[in-house]
Image (cartoon, rainbow, N blue to C red; front, top):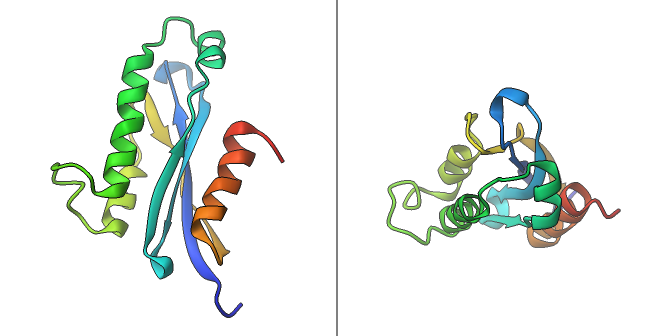
Length: 129
């Protein structure tokens, strides 16, 4: 396993009505310390969302997606975005009862974190194998 790096990921889910527990996978966030990598891919299929949860505010969802990307990149001035990558990942994946949530964290090994993130996004969000 030389050259392979431990990574952690979580599925980003849309939970329009928390009390119902229904969710729609919309993205993946992946952290790999060995490759100094933290990134997320989020795809909101608006047509699917309207079938899943009519009336959901797409602007709110887009805002949450932008926040995920900004925090991963350390691209805004919030205190969270200024933390190290491991701490940002832990903050993003902390349990919460909001419209956008993450699954529990899952581990794996990879050589290329960006390619692994793309693959997980295809399999878990786009449902392409």
